[in-house]
Image (cartoon, rainbow, N blue to C red; front, top):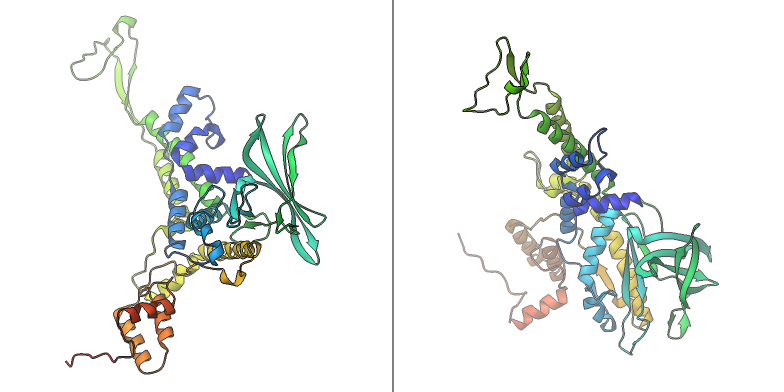
Length: 441
């Protein structure tokens, strides 16, 4: 659980890391509390985790997902969650959480009261830190989630409230409890809830634990953990280096000899004369070692390591000697985390939205969620567009295939099906079958 808090603090940025004090930056031996605060304040936190995550989410959602819903589920497009967030915001939250934490809980639920004939289900979201425990068992030969404990944002008499989703005697139930006393003991609060759909209890828990690896309840390593650990290590080096420069950066005057107390200099600088006894030696103490320089080299090494771990995805570059195809294949390999993330988020939303359709007696087949896998911009060049037109004119491909290729080449909108595009062309009086007249050179 501590790993999740570390990642969350790194994503919050420098002030959050500094506010945690000795949790991430131990106090040097013998340093006073006041000097330790100055020591922390001088350090600089390199925000590679937050910059990397922002870039990865931007690449994953470079093109809007294409979502089709039956009319009965259309209200969920604008109010998908229990806090009334639209479906697009939910998708962005899911991609961000799975990419950074490697775990996200998604629960399908119905309002407890005030339901009408047009009421739709909603999603309840749970971050990695709030998924406290779970159990699985084999039911009819298949591994099923039979219990999950979640930490809610409620409190009861100052104690955290836990929500338990449990499959007991093949019936889905919801319980709430707190922990109190020493040693801690469980105390149930409120009534047990047995959700029903059309008067029937559910025989499954409508909850998915989404990770970048699967939709099965499991412990997976958070994708950003290594990058965040390295960023913390870099911050410690920054504090040490800034402290060393503070102590040794300004030359310090020294005096050697027998100097009466009334003749000890009290000031230094132009316009100040030191009247010292004969034979007294003076000088300036300056730092000449290579220790601070070696710290700088170490910090640069860690910046390079952070780039290797993920920050290189902040920009998609093509090497001078690479072809476009080679650069595309290399970059797609580097973005494998994004690919697995969008696959799992897409699968989770599809499964639960189809379940929501079943709850409302709508057709699950009318639900589809499709994410783009084109994380890098590869717009079709004019010569390729002309080549596609020649293939169509020569009868080698159909108009629908031509349109699909233009969609992949980012010429046509990815979320508009061919039938809709054809209707728009017909409305404008266009004729796709007419020959293209080219000027004679």
